[in-house]
Image 1 (tube, one colour):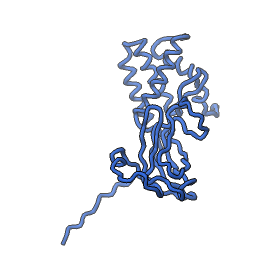
Image 2: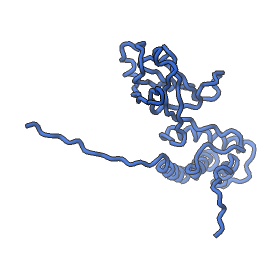
Image 3: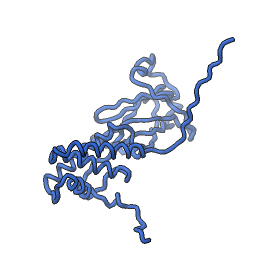
Image 4: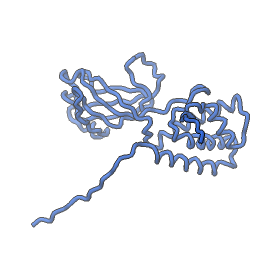
Length: 239
């Protein structure tokens, strides 16, 4: 039996092909001009909506922050168009998931705390090895604030952290979508639903159901498998 021997379909499936497929699903062919622009805008909006659906494991990244003595707060940017000229800046960050203090490749996990816990710390300028961090998510940036504030002995050491990266914009029609192959079916179903809102309102309900079904399958398949063990806590009666 002859087969192609390749697994590159999603790499050759360009934005214009995605748009054509989505329009065909609502019965429209031969789109051009404003229809292409409208579909590209809808695809970008849908990618932003996916960020509200939970964690997408393919967009989890790892990076280091080089610590500076006396500096507690470090900034990452949501957008690649933030106006900074800092060559070391990290872009496209949506949230920080977990972090560790790294000294000579030895990691000490840091505890993520919320705003109220950070606000309750009495002396935020205390210096030493960081043990906790607080993340603030702004419109244009993400900041990570450490406690304790790194001192001179921590300067040059690192905070190693995992973060969620924003899905990249669609861009040119000849680009590929910034999604793994598992999400191609729900991307097409979702764009068809979005286009039906504007072009085929009589099909909105059925396409929405199909989109949600495809998306749930993709989300269930996303991530990495591992074993989980649940052990009940044992209580011993007092004698």
